[in-house]
Length: 487
Image (cartoon, rainbow, N blue to C red; front, top):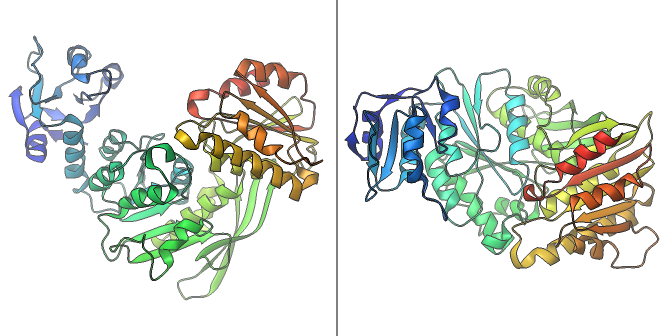
């Protein structure tokens, strides 16, 4: 990616206050400390106006680190001693970044696949990339899916790319509208509607409406792929749906019911991963199937893989070919990794959490079969889910009720121990024991990760399986690291 300051001025309508129109830019950053690590690039620094810190304060540091240009919001004082660094005055620095990214994105006539949902965006993105591994693709790095991360991701598209896979996250009203205006996806994958960020948006229905703005720039030929196991998403398929945007003309479904366009059967989970049969109609309309193996666990990952297969097929890559890429997929760190040590099976799912993903984690560990190393007891270690607002207690309680009901329905593979950490997570334990049942887990609430580690070390034995999960701010990876060191 190489553009000039003049290109940026044309895209943003900004004013050049210093420097040359011909300065070449091939990188953008909002972090002055990062610029030194991008020494091979001509970086434009984007100062972000935060709630507590004004990014304009770091312009001198960015210049000292090697930045070749910077945005400056109209009305801000120009820093001293900027030399020949290009200074571009704009109305809003983040909006200018997005507008420039849109200008750049429109130079490429390639499929852009947008991925949203309450949980599973990053995993689905990685699985789509795996399914499309036979062609040259560009994808979001990590989970850079915000109003800043998404435009910077778009600048990574190269002329030899045949498709771009863009993760689109939002946590507040009108955010997805800005992301869609910048990325203009041709295809959209909607993984699910959960309660993540419900504190900001008020209801699942509001979350659905907000996330559907991903399709704001769809044309009649563009396609939305949705999870058929999500009741609220399936409302979009009804002729009289009040939620379906008028410009969404084509919907493809994926899930576990035979009514879906792509559906899974014969699902089995072991310590080595997940196997299932993907069923779909061929181009000739004949029902066809492929056996798929994933090096990760859980029904939610089966759905993610089905979405990837469906997208790949739409782009001309057969399931027989895309399954080869999926077989090479490895989960990102802290996103459902299977770790075996000292006779323990540890599922490290500590990157983040929502009530729905916690329920999925219960399914994962409950469905696991040990094979040659039988699983004797199952432990769920859950920390607080943050950003639930006034629904925090009820949402955590609901996770506990889910565990209670799961144990009741499948007592031979039940959760034997439930350990909760933090404040609101205590209500998971209350929900799990809200009825007096023989199948209820033994519960223990801890204030800190250190307390949970000490408690677990007194209990864990060879043959135990443990899943660890919590919001990013709870740092539950500390528990996984401590358990690995102790065996």
